[in-house]
Image: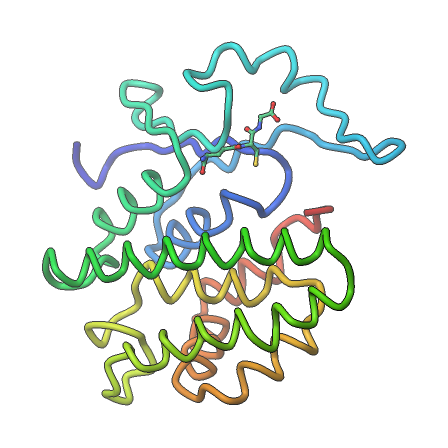
Length: 214
Ligand SMILES: N[C@@H](CCC(=O)N[C@@H](CS)C(=O)NCC(=O)O)C(=O)O
């Protein structure tokens, strides 16, 4: 497979589990088809008629799915897709150890998201505690691990999968005031967040991407 491959990323019309992959494409300047199944909400239920018709076509009946070269190769599972793209676009550290460190931080981001969903379901006090305790602990760890080389990136002085995952994590919270308050305490992470947001291709994408319900 060469850099002349074609790509179709299939997901719902939402950021969710596809947005990091979309941003990897954008940051790499790689064209891709951004295929989105429509989603609306009715009475608290997601309505997705086209997806309901098509879902059995997909190996695990889940999306995102990445089709390469017109379906010659199919990659499923959002983390596998992200890692494949990061590797392909040289955003996966400079060696296998750095790649594993990026993987581990990505898994920690998943754990944090799970903790947040649990806290949110448990009510306002739990959500407050999540920002003040759980998120802080993770940010402190990420801050300590960062290569403090003034590059504005977390590892290898170069934009990586982790930088984009962190940016999307920070922007996924509805309560931006609380997350920005925590972020102020971790200057390296704040710089990474701001630098990713100012990356020309990502800035343009954030401005022009569809406005979605999730
Ligand atoms: N572990 C999978 C989870 C994929 C997943 O659960 N996707 C949801 C959308 S976010 C889905 O396709 N659901 C199918 C359905 O609701 O019928 C991944 O990270 O890709």
